[in-house]
Amino acid sequence: MTHTQWLSLVSISGYVAEESWLEDDRSRVFMNASILALKDGQLSNGEKRILVKLAHALRLQEDEPKRIYDAILSGKTDTISGDGLGHSEKIVVYGQVLEAMLIHTDRSEEVIAQIAYLRKMFGIEEAEHRAISRSLDRQLEEIVHRSFIEEYRVRLNETGDALRQISSQLLERVVRR
Image (cartoon, rainbow, N blue to C red; front, side, top):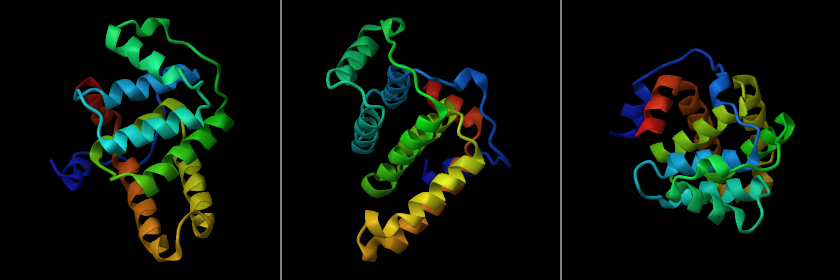
């Protein structure tokens, strides 16, 4: 299925965070994102980049991603817990991961699902996402070479559109794979 076909499966007018998706524990955020990335049994380069950036943005200890990965493989995820994460910090983490996705990944449907899942876990509303996008756009000239600016802006807009089009049903289907 192409990215366009995948996005055309659903269309939603707004974004509402469901309580069951919300997560305030750094380690569990990383664990949930890792479980989603591993649903198909392998990690794409884009998924790896997103997880590396997420671990860094969450300020996980150096050995924690491996410990979480091992817990996932052994089925002992109930033992995973870490420090709390406030909403303002979630906004910063989301922005950093979104920026990494825009600059360093292929924006495959798996990577887009990672970003959408992170957004749901963090309870980031549409207005907050737009504010983060505007902030990334303002920082654009500092982030990337001038020749890449227009392509980056297009990616930023397309990603925002894609995230708006992902419904809970579609994300749940990706998570259940």
